Image (cartoon, one colour):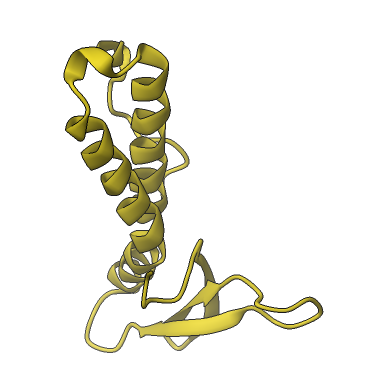
Amino acid sequence: MTKHTRGPFAVNQLSNRLGHNIWGVYAPKRQPNRTPLLIGEFHSLGISPEECEANARLFAAAPDLLEACEAMIEMQRKHPEAVSAAEWRETWSKVLQAIGKATGASSTKQEDSNVE
């Protein structure tokens, strides 16, 4: 049982005034007709606006990164020859998506031709 707020998390810019950026990280709605749950705010005081956004994105990607890492560990527990190419591609895709979410990229530039 996890003790952290369940994801997936989303990132949204809350404010951009006078060079001070505020980014919010939200968890999914817990009940219908409710607003998403704000679980973190990131302020650009003392850091660049780009670093502030990157910090918020990394935080928001944490549940995805955790899930992808756990999937990789579970696959490693199996004998390598027991892992099918389809299982490997699916898990690799989760890893790439989580990294993309963390970095703000729509897709990562990592080569996945050696995944098969």
